[in-house]
Every structure is written in structure tokens, then in C-alpha cells.
Length: 343
Ligand code: WQD
Image (cartoon, rainbow, N blue to C red; front, side):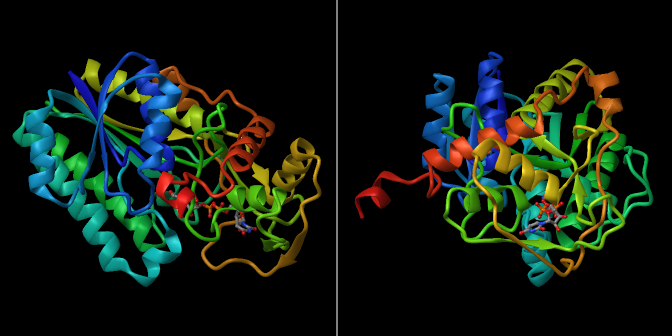
């Protein structure tokens, strides 16, 4: 029996695949490489020392999905595949609704056809929108503020209706806060194409001299140092949260939702200082205006995952920065394919 990982060569995907393999699961994975590179698949094998089947496939393609389910004995699915850029989703909502929701519907229909009713779904703290207070618990009112967030919220609702229609389904929804960091080997990490829109990869590229200066979006927020506060969680801690979630869906039917965060807030200036501490380099930055759509403060109440899943984040901000830098130094251009190395 195998666990299928959709979006298996993405930033989250490679780390989830490694942790599943390390825990002794057989896995099958696929990706359409819209936001990742085939070299990432080799890194999973290199880091885990394990073999597994990987397909180049698209979740919106029913035939491709059917072949994967026909050729493998799948018992559960970790569903990570999806477009995830907030700004891009505002400019191209149909692509986001069609891919993230349409693709998920195709996946769920195929799972049901092949009698696979165990699912871990990658959701996001973005479903909390501009929430009232912090820490944010799972029962906070949900309100997305962009098409990307709406796709996550709508899929959550679809999953609840599905489970009511057939109680055999075992579903866990994981709401990620801000995943950062990289595998300690330095062989896997975040590999955004172009200039990173997220803070952590941007700072790390400034630290290694790939980018000149960080623009700090907003210094007049109601926070101790005026900059935005987020709950940065190490990608390996996040990946381990998926192991606990898989165990739960394999044990019992039902549906439940959990925050994956550290429960601690960290400001932009604090993250800059942490990167300076571990890199020994000064990070040039300029305070500029707020980025539209940003909230001032967001960090998790992660006590439910601790109580029910027996999971908690263990890695520190400094370790997140150390692992990010190691990845950036070892792979300044991300997952270089052999072809591009010789081009
Ligand atoms: C963090 C803080 C910025 C860049 C996003 C998505 C969310 C999720 C995680 C998918 C904020 C500030 C950033 C920069 C800055 N993705 N910042 N200069 O916006 O909290 O979450 O990624 O699920 O859906 O919205 O993360 O890293 O972009 O920003 O000052 O160049 O860093 O204002 O306060 P965010 P982020």
C-alpha cells in the first residue's frame, strides 16, 4: 500500500516525501513542474536513500490520474498540488479556480472511483483573512481576501460536504502558517522562480549577495517594532505534521482541521536580525510603504495539533535561518538541471 503525494517536487512536497520515506511509508508522487524542477525528485532519493515512483502528471488530467491509481495500490493521499501566489491569483482568478478547485475535484472523483478515502489536504492560514485577534485558533471566523485564499476555503467546504455524504472518508485539513527553512542536508529547499515574493527566501538571497537590498513593507503597523509579524515554521516541522495527519486518517474516518504553526510571532526586523546573526553578514534594507493585502499580525494557536495529533514545532528561528542559508549557498540558482549546468 502506498501514500500518494500530489505536488511532490514542490517546496513542501520534497520535504513531505522525505519524511514519509524516512518513516517507512511506500510513496508515489506526481507533479506538473509548473512551480518546481525535475531535479528536485532526484534530491528526494538522494536525501532519503529510498526509491519511489514519480510521475510527471497534472491533477486536472483525469486520464493521467487514473493511470496512477490503476498502476499503484494507493491507501491515502497527501494533496499538496496547487497554485499558491496570492498576487498572481488576483490577476488571474480563473486559472486559480480552475486549477486548484477543478484539479482537486478531479483528484477526489478519482480517489472515490478507486475506493481511496483517506486524505490530508494542504490548506493555509490565508483562510483566516484579516482576523480579529491572535493567536489564531481553528474556530476563528474564516474569510479569504484573495482568489488563492478562496480556493483553499472552498476546497475545505467541499471536503466537509464529501465527508458528510460518505462517512467512510478520513480527512485532515492542515492550515499552514509561514513555512520557511530547508532540509539540514542543504540538498532541498525553497526554489522560487525569479525574485522571491516571500520574506525568508528574499532575505537569504540578500545574505548571499544575489539580491542587493530588502524592501521592508510597512514600518507603521501596531506591532512592537512597527513591522509585520508572522508565525514562521520550519519546513521539516511542517512535513512531520503531515506524518501525524496521515496516521490519523489511516486510523479513523471523520474530518478535522489543524493549524501548523509554532504559536510564536516574529517581526520582519527580528527575522532580518536572525539572518544577520547566523550569516555574520549585514542585510541591507529600506523601510517602505505597506504591501496591499498584508495583515499586521498573524500567528497560530497550535495547541489543537499538539493535543489531538501529538505534534508540535520544535525548530527555532535561528535553525530556520541556518538551514535556509545552507540551501542558498549550496544551490545559489536553486535545483539546477544537468542540462542547464552544461548550457
Ligand atoms: C511575510 C512578512 C510582509 C516580502 C504568504 C502568503 C500565504 C502563504 C505564505 C501560501 C509580511 C513582509 C515580505 C518582502 C517584506 N502562502 N515582507 N518584504 O504574506 O505572510 O504569506 O506566504 O499559502 O498565503 O500570503 O508571507 O513572506 O510574503 O510576508 O517586508 O520583500 O514579510 O509584509 O509582513 P505572507 P511573506
